[in-house]
Image (cartoon, rainbow, N blue to C red):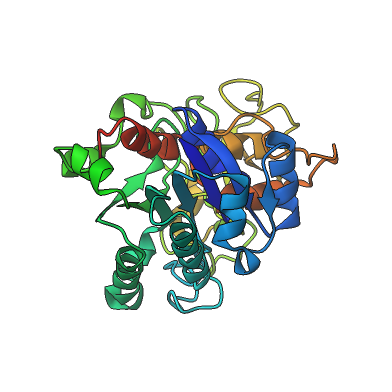
Length: 352
């Protein structure tokens, strides 16, 4: 099946969908650094910069059979941690541009394509504007011609990567034969909540390095005054998954002094220890004289997203990215194992 990716980022959707047999045929991404990463990994796939200038006829001109369109429109206006401007906000309203492209593809192909549309966003999309924004999403899918729509909140920590990352996935089917073929819901409650627990973290496994006695440290508590920082304690218990990666905060690890970064699952770059960790209140109990703190490396963040090592390291030109861009791209991305699970349900008609 052919895959069209809008708001591609660095290809998290593509990585997951291709693992079960999809072929990426078109990508759209406005961020030049993310687009550079796409050029490295998908050099032969036609690309577009701005979704607001993209037409459905352009997509069909390079692929006559765009079976599935996936997109995760910017989430800043829907996130609980963001401004909560809603789907009408300047960033999240780009959802409507993606739907416009879907409608235009259907017009050009006489309603034959796409057969599937998948939208991914923060779980806060469900409650934004009292739930009215999510209702608008479903209405737009139906208005574009979807004959069936299902959704579920899926957490990456249950799909083989030790990161808390709750995202809502909406799958809309546009082909009555394809949708009607299945007897069960695409997202049955038991699976949509559980995911694939067999791939989940094992008892005693630590999110960032896989080594015993490391604690995950929330990025927005590092270097802050004692009166600032997260609302909670700001650090994980041993064996807990890492905090959700974001585009702004870089989480850290508290580990025993002298514990080599080459042990466990941590990455090759040299460790960068911070001289202080201000957490406020009883949070100081996380550290003692035998502990030190360093931030996650970009490779560790890629692994927490289920991406190959160094996936974000270079542009197609061979230029190496700064760590700052790599952290941002991981925080904005789609966890590949979750995307793979969704794609498997679609391609094998064994739905959620």
